[in-house]
Length: 417
Image (cartoon, rainbow, N blue to C red; front, top):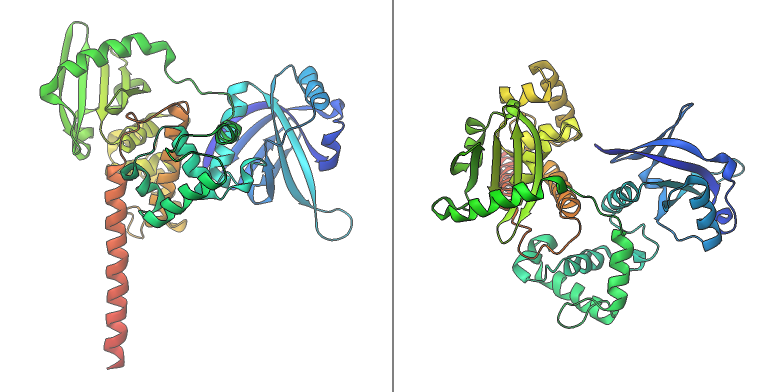
């Protein structure tokens, strides 16, 4: 799965201990870095290197001021990231700890760090690594003002005991107080994990979006519901609004006419999306289920991984919808080829009619990561929305697994009689 591609200045294969004192400035090179769910790919003018995520030990290890100043002086960038990884020793047996350093735009460094932390479960952070994964997860959720049990439980497998014990552990470690507010130590760790850079989405359309959202809130007779999405078309002085279920969305939205799409959050209602068409119309889409907005945005996002976009199609129950395939530039053969690959990976079922539990887990991780970046790590207390559709699909998948297990057991008992 492809997550992103960014440009950096970088240097790799540095002995770990050397970074504490000195980095050879003559070995820096221009990199194009691609991140997948298995590797960091480093592309230069002369070669391509792969570093498996399984090799990575730490991300964002701090360096001395002297070394940091030399990095900033040579690369002309104030932001950099250190990644420590294990590599097979050239002499003898075992692995040796090496480091790579990359420097670039603040937002690119922050995004790469966030993606790596998401893929590695945040355990690779040298500061946060002392916390258990569930403790760090809860700490970050508290930092985002998500402290209600009904919101937190689904993120902890609906295990009340696990949630309670995790909260108590954070209190014992002086990360939070009894009211789930972060202590200075807790805030320091969260800032370390998140980084100071933020991804800005749609800042150039704030004014127009706010105007639309004000008009939108006034149309109370067509408010979004848990099963229906709210959609409004606007062209010049004319506007039309109504409710559309997720299953019927493609009957009302011609994806091939959309020129650009932007995600924004709407106070108290969840996520919204603003779309501009080639003929000058504006389409405003709002859903109580944030996963629907994020999945639709993923389909429309040309930078998104192809198979991820196909997975979003199945999530929104569009399958091989012709308009979507045309927008993605896929013919039926190309679509079938990727579907077979996704079946082999265990993401789609054997009949290519639904998403497996593994696929749903992948979707959940992807959506959680997207909402964190798109909402700029800000407070999302009343703006996060729900993942109702994903929760329903997980329950259906779990029931199917139970039924298959019961049928298999029944057949085994029948054969022994």
